[in-house]
Amino acid sequence: MYVKEKFNASEVKLQNQFPEQVWCRIKTNDNREVLVVVCCRTPSENVYGNGIPENIRELVWEISCKNFVLFGDFNYRGIDWTHNCCDGTASVDSRLFLDCFNDCFVTQHVDFLTTDKSILDLIFSKEPDSVCNVQELGSFGSSDHKLLVCNLDIMDNRVKESKIRFDYNRMDVERD
Image 1: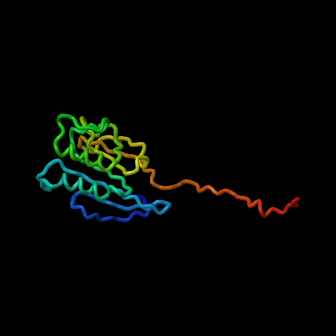
Image 2: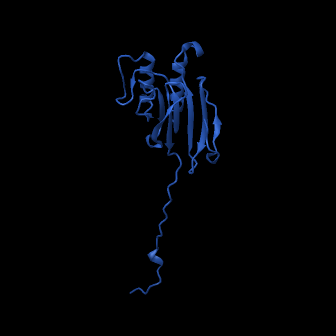
């Protein structure tokens, strides 16, 4: 994960035991916080054992009440993100993964294939308008996965409006 210095990011450690995650906290102009994470779930249980799918769902539940953007290669096949459902090839873990994000009212932003046959690389956010302009940059080395880039609209750059209000009771006028 790379974050420009001007964003004043700080590393965050969550209590979740999912092994492949990196978090940072970015303070917005109006002093709100946005958590940003990059994670990867290997499709092979030989690497970390078989508790990883539960750890991912627990991670989502842990942050579901916070403002966050979650980037990751989740490797859950059989999910149709366009129609927000699973097809007949989806595993139980894929179905539970989709249900978890739906239960937490999280938005998934990638709407094109990130491998030859599936959308496996995903971008989630709590606030639907915080992620925009998601694009593919091409293949990632010899992998069949695509590199993704997007814009995050997390800084509050709105101009504060000020209005002049006149107190007509204090006007210097002659009264009849």
